[in-house]
Amino acid sequence: MEAVSIKNVNFSGKKVIIRLDLNVPLKNGVVADLTRIERIIPSLKMILDANPKYLIILSHLGRPKPKLPSNWTKTESLEPVVETLQNLLGRDVFLLNTPIGPKFMQAMNDLPSGSVIMAENIRFYEGEEKNSQDFAALLSELGDVYVNEAFSCSHRAHASVVGITKYLPCYSGLCFEEELKVLESILVKPTRPVLGIVAGSKVSTKIDLLLNFLNKLDYLFVGGGMANTLLCAQGYKMGGSLVENDRLGVAETILQKAKSSNCKLLLPIDAVVAQKLEPNVATQIVDIDKIGADQAMYDIGPKTLEYLQNTLRLCKTVLWNGPVGVYEVPPFGRGSIAIAELIAQETRENRIISVTGGGDTIAVVGKYASDFTYVSTAGGAFLEWLEGKSLPGIEALKLAQADNTSTLAKGVA
Image (cartoon, rainbow, N blue to C red; front, side):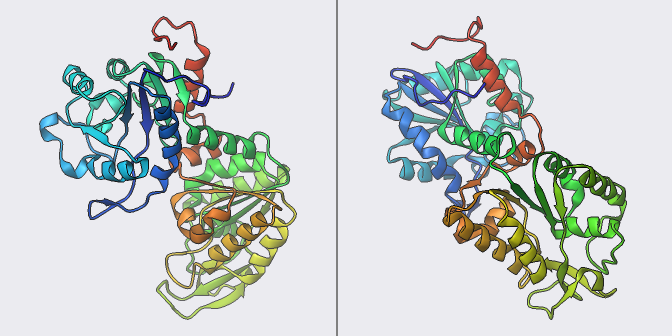
C-alpha cells in the first residue's frame, strides 16, 4: 500500500505533530543552505491552512549525545533554524526549550491557538535513538495526529520516526510522498531503458547499491575510484590511482554478476591523469590501458564522456549518484560538470526523466539542479532505498495506516 498523504485530511482543531529534518548546514550560526527547509514549507502551510489547534515540530540538528536539560547548549540548539523557518513560513515559530513532558505541555497550552511550536533538538533525549516505546508514547501525548515529513530520516528506527506511529493516526507529508513516488518510479516501475551513473571513491561503500542496480537497471556506468578497483580486477594497470586491493574479490563478484544480468556494465575507456593531486596540476588524457606507473586517474576522459552520452540517448530514465572525478580539485571536476550539463539538456528537451541525490552529486549539479526532474535531499535514506533496503520509517508509517483497529490509536474526526 502507499503511504497516506496529508492532502485529504481535516486537521481543523487538531494538535498536529510533524517530524521534519531541519539538520541543515550552519555557517557562523546562520543556515547556509535553505533547500531542505524550503521543501517542507508547502506541507506546513497546507496543515496551517486547515486551522489546527497547534502544529508541533520535532526535529534534530547535528549528532548531539543525549544529555540532561541542564547540559543543553546553544551550539546544539535548533535556535538558528527558527528565524529561517519563520521567514519562509511567514509567521512566528515558538521554540520551547522545556523538556518534553508536563511542563512542555503547559507551556504549549499557554500559547495562542494556531501556534507553530518547535521542541528542542530531539536527539537530546536518550529515548530517541533507542526507539524507546516509553519516549515514543510521551511524544504522542503532545498531539492528536502524526505527520512524517522527514523522508531523509526514515532509514533510522528512532522514536520520533518509528515508535510514535504506534500511538497516533499517521500521514506522510507532501515532500515525503513525492520522494517515495519518484524513487518507486525509478526502481519499481521505471520508464525504460534506465541508466544508472554511480561513482565515488570506494567500491566497498556501494557494494549493495551496485548489486541492486545490476538487478534493476538496463545500463550501469561506474566512475570515480570505484571504477579503478573494477578496472584493476579486469587486469588494467592503474598506476598510482586509488584502488582497494583488499576488495578485488568483491570487484570480481560484481563483474561476474554483470555478465549474468540483463544490465550492461559500463566503465571508463579513457582517463584524465596526473602525477599528483593538486589544483591546476599538469594533466594528460590517455586510454585506460595507457596509464603510466607514475600517473593516477582523477577524472574521466572525452571518449568516456562521448560513450556515456551515446548510452544516455538510448535511455528514458537516468539516475545519478556520485561525481565521476575528484570534482573539488580543479580541473578534475570537468567530467562531472559535463555529465550534469548533458543530463540537464536531455531533461529540458523532455527526452529523459532524471533523478539525482547525494551531497557531493548535488554540489556538482549546482546551477543545473532546476533542470533535473528530481533532486533528492534525503542523503542516507536515498542511498539505502537505492540499495534495495527496507526503510523503518516508511514501513512503520504504512503499518500504522493499515492497522486502523489499533487500540492505541487516537481517533481523528
